[in-house]
Structure formats: structure tokens, C-alpha cells
Image (cartoon, rainbow, N blue to C red):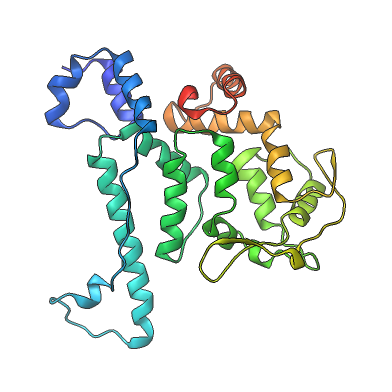
Length: 281
């Protein structure tokens, strides 16, 4: 019989527990189960390959309709994304890495963006999974350079002669500091710093110096010839970033009703561990 602690752990830090595991796992102390789950963070990840062939819908022997050639690529792309979702779902259910995959799912919602290509979605997902229980600073530095994030938040259109503020604004409001912790001036200056961040034809991050604004900027009180990496480092040093992350973790893993004292404790521990998410969790 599962204890209340065991039930809570498997429900919140994973995706439940299989019938075959009930007997063996319920005999273990909850502390040991938690330690084993965290230890999994250092193990190699099961790969999510995605589907590289054509659309299973188009190739099915049960196909009863014809698809116009101009729509075939669209349907193939959609089925590839569906295949990627299914494969990740299978890993969540059967890999035995519940906490790490649950944490990756948390980041998937935290850094929400829409992908239109399977290759872009797979790269984005692998960044989330590889850093799920690693250091948040490392994850943030990686995720802001993913094509998924750059394309979805229009940073390919962010150029020195015509800044686009979408990427900079969402980075601060949704992913790091939270609403009301920065000014509109900070958004404009951060957007200037991120000019030139783009992707190449192969879907990889590329910096285009001809599109970058190299002049001096002032962001959250810091002045200099700041670029995108400087902006990220300044954001990571803000107390608001630790509080925002603490609130997001609490809502997902504990309770949607915020406990201010608990948030302060979690934020303090995020600072103490220097964003080490395995220790924080």
C-alpha cells in the first residue's frame, strides 16, 4: 500500500507508478526514492529521434482520399511533429526517468513556443531534456539561441535599423523576471542588444554582425556596448529572476495558490545553489 508521501512523490514528481513497481517501490524509504530520482539526472538520455520519412497518413494503405501535392509537405510536417510528441510521451511513460521528464515538461511550458518544423522542435526539446535538472543558467543561455525561440519570437526580424522588441520582452516577462520588474526603456535597450541573433538555412543559431547595433546601451542600470549574452547575464543576477522561477516551480509542482513564505525560501535556495535545479528540486 502506497503511503501518502509515496503517492505525492509519484504524482507530482513523475507520471504515476506502474502496477509492476508497486511492491518493490513501496518498501523503499521516500528519501531513497527521491535520491534515486535525482541521480537519474546524470544518466544518458533516451533519444527522441522524431520521424524522418514521409507522412504515415499519406502512405497508409487505409487512405481513402487523395491529398493535393501542394498540401503534401504541410501534412507530412504535421505528422512528423505528431510522431515526435508520441515518442516523447512514450519516454515519459516507460523510461523510468519520471522526475527528469516531468521537469522537462515543466520547462516545455515555461519556455513555451510554437515550432512549425520537426527538426526545430526536436532540437528545442533536446535542450530542455538535457538541462532539465541541470543549471538554470546553462539552460537559459542555450534556450535563447534555439531556432525555435528565435523564430517564434521574431528575432530574425530584429535589426539595428528596425528593432523588434518581441524576443526581449518575452524573455523578461515570461521566462525570467516577470511582469513589472523592468521598464519599457529596458525592453528597447535589450532589443537593441539582441539585434543580429538569427538562424541559418540549416536551422542553427547564427550571429549576423551586419544587423547588430554595436552602440552603447543602458539595461537595468548597466551601461556599455551590450550584446544579447550580456543581457542574459544581467538578468540572471536580478533577484526578480529567482523569485519568478520560484513561483513557477511552486505553481507546477506544489500548489497554484502561492505561499509567499515558501516562495521566499525557494528563491533563497535558488540563490544559495546558484541555480542548481537538481538541488533545488
